[in-house]
Amino acid sequence: MDDIQLRLLIDLHKQEKRQGPGGEAETRLALRLARLDHSNPLKIADIGCGTGASTIVLANELNARIHAIDFAQEFLDILQCRAKNQGVEEKITMLNCSMDALPYSDEEFDVIWSEGAVYNIGFEKGVSAWNRFLKPGGKLIVSEMIWLCADRPVEIQSYWKRECPEIDLASAKISILEQYGYRPEGYFVLPPHCWMENYYLPLQRRFQRFLEDHDHSVEAKRIVELEREEAALYENYRGYYSYGVYIAEKIRS
Image (cartoon, rainbow, N blue to C red; front, top):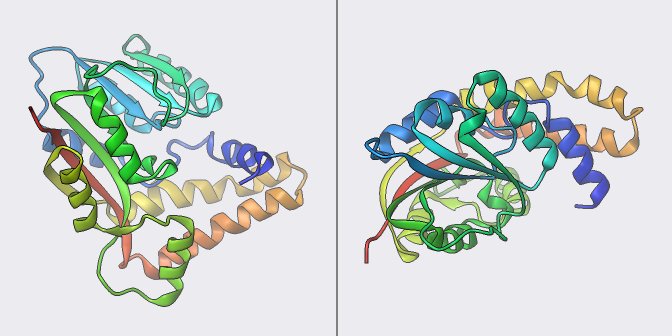
């Protein structure tokens, strides 16, 4: 992806509540499955936070200091405004950096949270690299694209193998977590409303304004075309893939 495409994608997505499939109820479900210790303040890294859909829920639900991390400063600026409007800005520290270059110390966090973002560096690379930032007994909550069954139509198999090469069955992702020092504690699949009502439909409502803002340029039209293709594929093949949400504990040595 070149710089023009990246800037256009950021501009298209920055006004949306979330930059990928998900939901507040699903974030709260992951919190319940994580069984976090509420007796002491928590230190949390929300990696690839976007405009803060999960960050705001965490800030409202927990006694925590949250480090909201994203490579796009535009997303963080919007998160800052949202946090102020929600009255939780004092609980959130913004950090503009890449998720594979985190400037933190070993065993610094009680929780590492990452919804729909680890694919940017790869699931295996992410969960293995982030392990050192977790305290022993700390919790990892991460979501990742998965196949829901072993056999898929050729069209959707080819599309997601190209767009998300590490897509695999949930069992393969759980095996990776076990390999890199985690004890899996919970797992669930994002339901269809997390894709359609919470993500694709709001995004589609922005297409016309986005095209106008960019004078209907060839590049902007291509971005919209690709987003429409992805949404159409989900409508046709939603029974074959989704995001899996994993809750795991860093094994105590």
